[in-house]
Length: 221
Image (tube, rainbow, N blue to C red; front, side, top):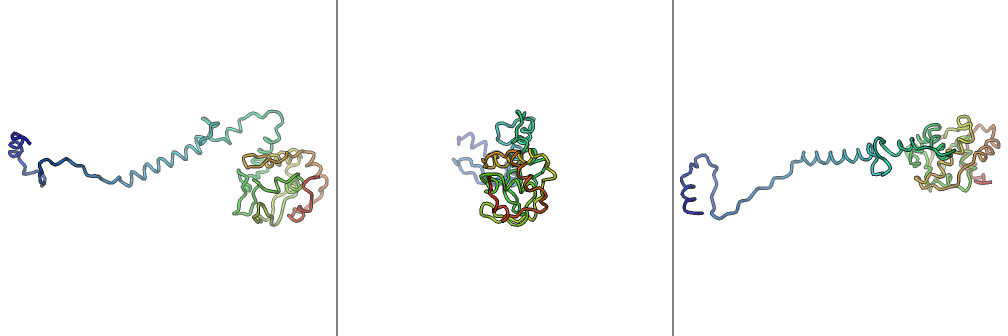
């Protein structure tokens, strides 16, 4: 410190100055204060809200989804159906007409809470032929069943013979289920003629099918 600076400092009024000890040549320092917890919480909530928006409002990271569409499912509703698309018809039956989605879920994973078995990867769904699953849709199902090595017992599945009177609707929904690549399924399509054949052969049946009964029926003619 120069002589002039020392003189000025000495003559200054320090009566109201804070009590501190001046050390000549000391470097200035700054204290570190912790980040307020509320600020961490705020930015955490902001980040989380942004992720929710991307997933549910902005289509997530699917490059096919953009405004004004909120998600891929909504976007697909506006896609044109070329010709008589059995798969697209089956998706509508699954979600809206028969409402299979209520129990088997949009991802085909079923619901362990109520004993509903999965359709994704199910050996019943992916059998060589559709003889058994056509019967299940027509007349329902009761009792326990093993799917992918796990036991399920959902009580009684609703029969749809009187609801889905058009064989094409049953063929469509089973085609959608068997060929749904999003679920990992890749089996053959089901033809309306196959549904009609089973419907005629089981006409008059008034009870649900059981697993043991179905296992005695060849999956394919």
